[in-house]
Length: 226
Image (tube, rainbow, N blue to C red; front, side):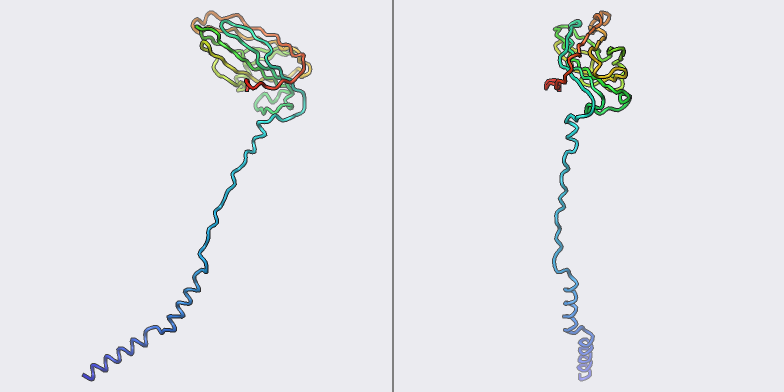
């Protein structure tokens, strides 16, 4: 019995000697607390400013060097059931306007623009017409509008056809090589007449405009044409 008691007492002594002391436990706790960050990390939201529209100046005409003139509602004629209005003509030194060009037209020192308003006042027939395929004469220079139109210098409505009671607004930019802006006082415009779609063989006579540009002025673009 005494032997059993002695063995148990020795075992208890060994367990106590091998276990960590109270001082060791408190030291480990202190070291662990010191290793932790004193404050929880805070995350500041990253605010990215919304970019402003830097291209707004492209919408505002930029004053350049050179001469520029523009005329509104110069003349109108009928062809078949169509009424064709020369709604605007612009002639300018290429450096005097804000319009940006690329391609072959940048080789021209003077540029022009012609805008057509076409109305089909017929109640019955549809017509097709392509004034942007015509020719312009300024001075001794004959300009083929079709060449510029096919190089993507046309704008506005793309269909040449007009149903009864409909209208179309379209135009084309073109280049002028041989005549200066100040020397352009007249423009002669010719193009094929209207074609009734129900009878394409009945083409209307050619359309011929003589436009007087001697009154040098720059009329602003009307709101209804914008």
